[in-house]
Length: 337
Image (cartoon, rainbow, N blue to C red; front, side):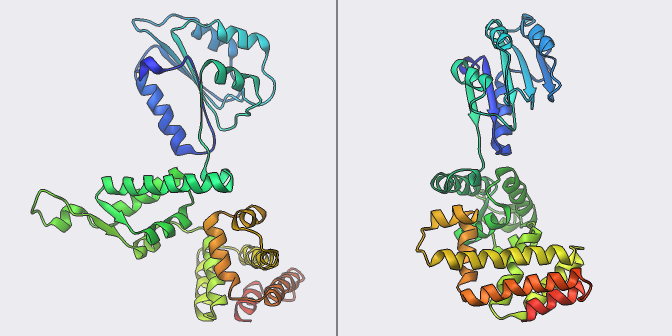
């Protein structure tokens, strides 16, 4: 791989898992661990003169000198022409790796590296267009299944969908939850009982996911509203009590509940215009699975009912802020109405 490396490399984007993976690949190929020919800089207060001085220093008992620059801020705004010229003049033995969160494609240094080196841009699936996101999500599902398979675990398609609803398509977050599930479930050695050379596959069930994977407050409010719209007031109130036990402020719950009712209402309105799912997701700023779940909720309520619930949320908020209604009671009234 080292022979294929370019002198100038940019790793950027918001998909942290793939960025970290690429950085480790490059550093490993350049044999930087414990090397006196490796220097790292971090932050926007970059001493460009020092970077250039090191870049012009020939490597000691090696073919390459590597410089890693993290979040330098050089890929936003203007870049001096002299700096680009000095980068071009660096010896062939010097390799620069820029590791950035934000990098503008119109930036001069970005264009410089794209022309003379290589840009590795990794975006989260939800940051892409609807069509590109769908393709990327399929790849991430496949990656997750393969990750589990290597650890003698398997997950049904339905269970995988539930897992991704909780984690999103952030691969770093997804990897963390997969590791938790692998640790939580029985080991293949235990199932094999010490006999045979082929280890069995351990099935991860939906109840395992519900038991071990982290849920956001928004997820819990979503579940609470789903229970209410299904007519299961007891479950909705139980989920509300769970949120209170987690020290979630009632007004935060009311805000999220109002937002959810608003999305249901907007979906009912837009659905009358016969808009496709791609455009609906874009207009409502939702991921594809969120749109599917929202559709399930919206089918249980009419447009006028959605509007009434939304108005009730506004009414309760006003009464609470004016001191005419207890926060907890106001939410219980909405859930029981």
